[in-house]
Structures are given as C-alpha cells and as structure tokens.
Image 1: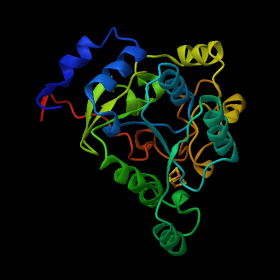
Image 2: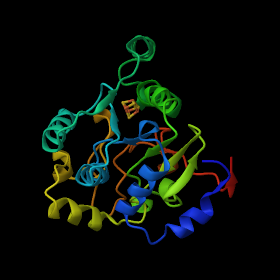
Image 3: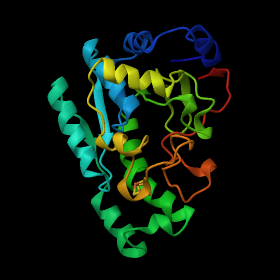
Length: 243
Ligand code: SF4
C-alpha cells in the first residue's frame, strides 16, 4: 500500500463488519504476505472461526514463548482439530533464552520493568519480528475497550514497529459481542476464561481479575497500567498519508 490515507480508510470502514474487513484484506494483499496473529484469546478464536468459515486461507500463527499454560496448548490442539488446519508456531531462539535465564534467572520479569521487557523481547518480539519480515500486513484481534493502551486503535493502521499494515477487524466490538458470537457459533475457547481470566498470556505474568477491573488488569498486574503491553502492539502514531 502506497500513499494510503489511513484516517480516510478508517472513516470509510467505520460501518464495515469484521467479515467485510477480512474480505477487504484478502482482496488487497497477496495471501502469502498476509497473516493472522493469534494469541489464542477469545477475540482470536472469533477471527479464526470467521476466516475458516469464510474459506479465507491465510497463515494463522501463534507464539510459543515456552511459558504458556497447559490449557493454551490444549486449545491449540482443539482448534486445529475443529477447523482442520495447523498453526504456524513461532518460537524464540533457545540459545538466547538460555543466556537470559542463566544471567537473570527464570522469573526475571518480576525484578524490574527493564527485565520484563527483555523477556518479552527475547520470547515474543524477536520471533514475531522474523515473521514480519515475510509480511506486508497482519491481522490482530485487538479491541478498543480492552485497555487504556488500546483506546485509539483503528480498523486499519500503519504498524510503526514492524513497518507493515495492521488490520484490527474487531476494534469496535464489545466483550459481550465477542462472547455471544462464541456461544452462538460453538467456538472452542480457552478453559481459563471460565475461571476469571479474560486476557491470557504467559502463565507467570497472568492472573485472574477482580469484578470491575479492566480485562487486561491481570496481565503484568504488578506494573503501571500504562506499561502493560509486551511491545507487540504499540499505539498508532497519528499520521494521515503514509508511504
Ligand atoms: Fe516473559 Fe512474561 Fe513476557 Fe512471557 S509475558 S515473554 S514470561 S515477561
């Protein structure tokens, strides 16, 4: 995409359904250069269901950081079986993980924000960055109401971190819409969602939330809410025309 006006596209797309946004993405990008990133959350399961039932065949990838819950691996297996595909599983470089752990310890993320970001960088960001070199655009399950860090995301935006287009078909959906769609369509979902975990990442960095807390309050709960992203999803820079 060259010289696209993303603000204008988002205005034009304001009334489009997630399915229409996905169809647009498949018509706009080479399907070998477009992929869907799933972290196995409820929103990701909705998008996986949409892609599979619409017959839109693109790579669906997920990152195995090595610190996931057993229930996450179980969901990967159940989803593959239901929809008849295999996830592209991204993994960190084991030598880098070993070096980090031997220098800073297995649970370095509790020590400081700097060490937490280092762990996310090695286990998530680096494998993702390698994948991004092969893409022009990626699809994500972000929603505006998930947290203060996501309040301004658009359906289509320029991803400054990776230099690709980022497509968020569910940006305007509420949590209720996500769950009624999952129930209506009998979509497999993470077992921990039924135990007070609306947002699930690595096991040591996720806890259940209390009533009234925002849905991402259980992620890196010991940190300031403004810091609670792993670097995969930074807020968009406000730009009009982009190269
Ligand atoms: Fe490491 Fe926690 Fe980030 Fe997972 S979420 S990569 S365990 S700091």
